Length: 231
Image 1 (cartoon, one colour):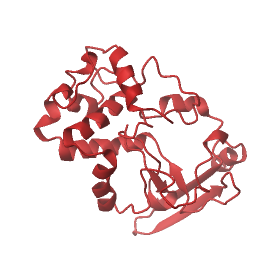
Image 2 (image 1 turned 180 degrees about the vertical axis):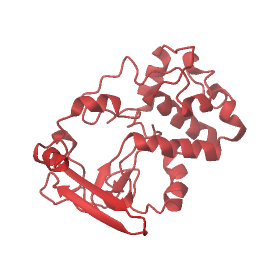
Image 3 (image 1 turned 45 degrees about the vertical axis):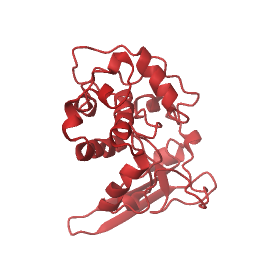
Image 4 (image 1 turned 90 degrees about the horizontal axis):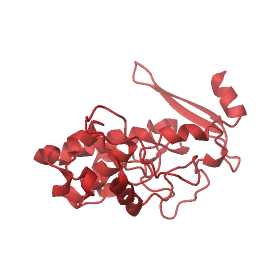
C-alpha cells in the first residue's frame, strides 16, 4: 500500500526492486512509469546516491596502501583547512567535516549535485570549519574530498578505477555517465517530479562530483544504479 501511495502521489513516480530469495532466485517488482509514459521494469535505470560511498570506500581500500594514514596534502595541494586530513579519517567520517559546506546552495534540491565541479569543491574546502575533535559525523563533503584524493593518489580518473569493481560485482548495466554514448535517454529518472525534495538535502554524497561514486544502474534487476557520484 505504501508503494502504491508513493507512486500515486508522485513522491516516487516509479519504483523497481529485486528480491533475492534464499534458494538463489530473484523476483522483480515494478511500479509506476517514467516521464515519457514508459512503464518501469527490471531494466529501468535510476540515479543512485549515497550508496556509492561504499564504492569509493572499496576503491580506497584497494588502492590507498600505506597512504591511508598519510595527510592528503601529500598527493594534492589541498586547502590548508584539510591539508592534514587522512584518507582513513575521510573514509570513516571522522575528519571533522560537515555533511555539506555552508556555501552549498544548489538551484534544484531534487538533483543537488548537478554541475558540482572541482572548483566548487576547492572553494568549499577552502572555507570549511573543521571540528578538531574528529568525532564521527556523516559527511558528503568528506567523501567528495576522498574521491578527489583517490584520483590524485592513483593518477587515474574515477571511471577507470570503477570498471574493475563493476566487473567483479557483475553489474554490466551500471554506468558512471548517463546516458552513455549513442544511447537514448528516454528512461532517465524524472527527478523533477519528486515531491520530497527537501530530503535530498541530506541524502547526497557531495554526490554529483564524480569522485563519490554515483552510477546509473538497471533498476531492480541490478541491485544498484545511478549516475555519477564520487561521494
